Length: 479
Image (cartoon, rainbow, N blue to C red; front, side, top):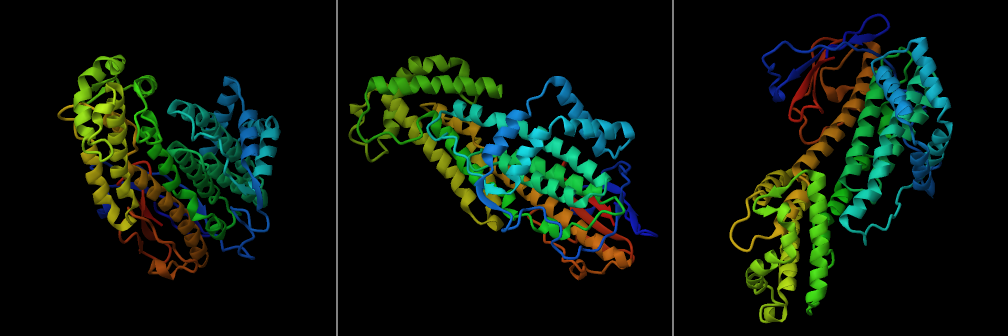
C-alpha cells in the first residue's frame, strides 16, 4: 500500500503481495489496489464512539433468546437472499448509486423486526445459552448448532448494509451503534456452547466488520475509531472454550463417560457398539471419507460381528495393561473387550494430543507439530482400532486453529494501528519510530513480521501486515 497525504489529507494505497518477512516479490508484477483513506484526530471525548457496550449500558440479561429469534425471523426465499447478497457485495465495492441506495433501503425496511431483535440483544451481555448438548450424541450436537451458525452470516450482511447507509448519510453515532451490534453478533455466533465452527464464524463476522471500518475510513468526515476499537474485549478471539468442546467429539463415539469397573455385559456392550457403527457411518457420509488407514467405513457393519470376533483377543491383551482388568479380562465378553479397548485408546490419544495445547504460547508450536505428526501415523499391528481413525478424523489441527486465532488478532491490531496512523498524519508528520505515534501502536501476535513499520518520508511509511487470505505471507504496504 502506498498512502500519500495532500490537501484534505487523503492517501492512495498500493498493495503488493510478498513472500515472508523479506518482502521478496513472487516473480510476477504486484497486484495493485487503490484506496483513499482520510486523516482524522481522535474524538473528544475520546470514548464518544464505542464498539462495545459500557458497563453502565450492559445488562446482566441473556442476549441469546433475542439472537435466536432474529435467526428465525431471517427466514428468506432464494430471491430475497440473492438480493441481500448482491447489495452487500456491491456496497463492499464502493458502489452507492441512487438505484443501489433504494435497494439497500428496501432490504432494511423489509427486515425491521430482525434489526429490532438484534438491537434489543446488543446491550444484553450474557451469552451462555445451554442447549443441553452434554447428553446428546455427536450427530445431534451438530444438528442443534448448525442452524444459528448458518443464519449468523445473513444477520451480519444485513447489519453491514445498514452500516453502509448510515455512513453514507454521515450518521456516525448510528454507524457506531451498528458496528457494536456486529461485534456482539460475532460473539453470539460463537457462544459458550458452540464448537470450533462457531469461533470461525465469529472470526468471519469480525473480519468483514473490520473491512467495513476500513472502507468507511475513506470518507472525508469519518471519525477516528482508535478508541472505539480499543473498547472491544480481546477475549472475543479466544478459542480455548471451543477446543474443549471439540475434545469431546471423538470420546462421544465410544461413550463419553468411562465405563464402570464392573462388566456391563454382552448385551449392553453390543448396544453401544451398534450406536458407534451408526455414528461412524454418518461421519463418513458427511466428511466424504470412506476409509482411513486400515479401517474401512464400508466394512463398519462387520464391527458388530466379524470385527469383534477377530479383534477380541488383541483387545484383551491391550486391557491387561489396565490395572483394573489386568487379571480380569476373562470376565468380559468379546464385545465388551473390544468396546473397552477402543474407549481406552480413544481417551489416551485425545488426552495425549490436547495436553500439548496447555503449554504457553511461546513454546507450544513445535510440540503440537510433533503431536500432529504422531497422530497421523498409519495404524500398525493388531488389533486395528477404529478409535484412532475416529480421533484422526474428528480432532482439529491445533496449530492451524491457533494460527487462525493469531491472524484474527493481528487483523484487529492492524485495524487499530491504521486509526493511529490516521491521527498522526493530520499534522502531515509521520514519526520515525512506530512507538512515537501519538496514539500508541498495538503489538502483534505470533506470525507478525519483523520491522513492520518504517518511515520513508514525513508522509510515506512502509508497513508490512499479515495477508489473512494467504497464511504465512505478508502484504507490503507503503503508507
